[in-house]
Length: 230
Image (tube, rainbow, N blue to C red; front, side, top):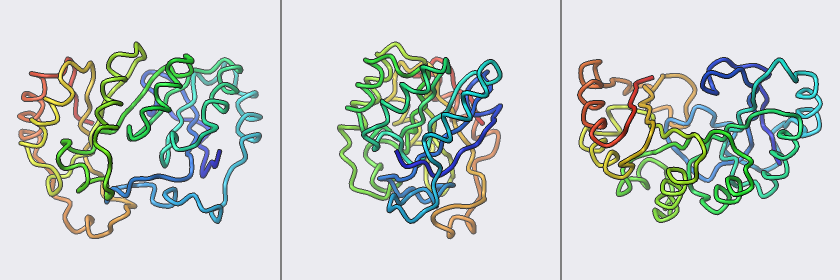
């Protein structure tokens, strides 16, 4: 495991839970709005946090923290992720995984071994535009497999999409609604201008109005049980 960062307390990242956050190093996507660009490369040159130091801290927080969020980067590219989660679970913590859904095999293993309590999968775009947003020539079948598995595995979950008007049209959200039809929860996350991979985005930050977000949500509610804007 390459851990690029560790946040000891969060009230926001695990729904209704107090959590710590582990940021894994390395990601196979190159999304232009990525707000953790320093975590993209897993070349060993970035100062990292040891697994032992994370586990030692968690041992001191039993009864004070509810869970641990594992985010990135993309956690599922780490082959030793299951072993790391097992150590966290031994300490009695819930585990939430943030993923881009490009490693369905790892997702299946984690859920089959009952290692996850909550999954948050980023839906980058409608499937026909994934390459445009993810920045790579992604195998769309892997994204489809992850969506299907998450919706049927029995683990609590949410889907979510970062929204910037320049990148995604209202029609794109209608397509996404069809592709996650029957999902329980879907969040639209407003793009926040800050640290990003593609700094050109910082000059094109106009987003949808509250009224337009409402219209998008109404369309999505035809497909998803719960839709909210963050």
